[in-house]
Image (cartoon, one colour):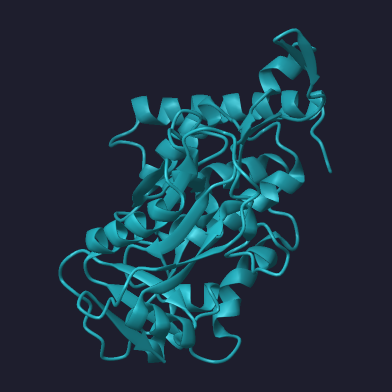
Length: 341
């Protein structure tokens, strides 16, 4: 891993300070306000939270941002997410551009690597979702979607039979990047560039000395294993390829569905706590206080999936090793329909 030296931090901060002052002078001495991207640049120069991060972590962050500022439209074409819809990722993109600028520019291969998840949608011609949802009119009231293989979703629709997996199940190499994740760990990064400038490369916590050296502090939040079912809050044309799906189950009464699942699960696992709501997506460098329920949170790199999660966690921490379970909640035909390619 390529770490950042104290001298590199010092040089960048001096440059960022000059650029911050230039933007402030422009704001005070020219007609009109700063442009939106200049405001975001000023935010970063005032708090360059990425300047001590390793090159590798910066490349990963660039890819996560790039994936989320793009959208696969209903006509099967990639476009940029409108700024008015969600400017937070454009802000992040502006910040990381400034940090790469302080390091001499975006390295060769970074953009190509960031584009790979997007290009995957076109490996077999038009994305399968274009055929799947051609002519389909989505419900006007709130609904959720389960993407998967038609043979399994048909069984789910007819009989309500479904698999519910432990969170640890998804951390397997067999899964694609869109699915694979360590669902029992939430990592946060605490910038240390100010401390390193002072010659400090460790901190003391609860009687222990923790060395961070030439890196930011990595703070993992590890939780006990739990069960989860993943859904989406709408129809998105990227999801079938992400989840290797050729069908989608449109659930038009999410609350009724959740009640049936919770009832059947608690009959088998009494005493567990059910949770059902959209995920909170957090930035590991910025959102330290945003994660209130770890089981219902996820790294912002996955936020384009707009997941709604049904999760179950034990009220105590004495639990066996979890394995996938099968539930049968009864026919769903009165409140769900199947759409397939």
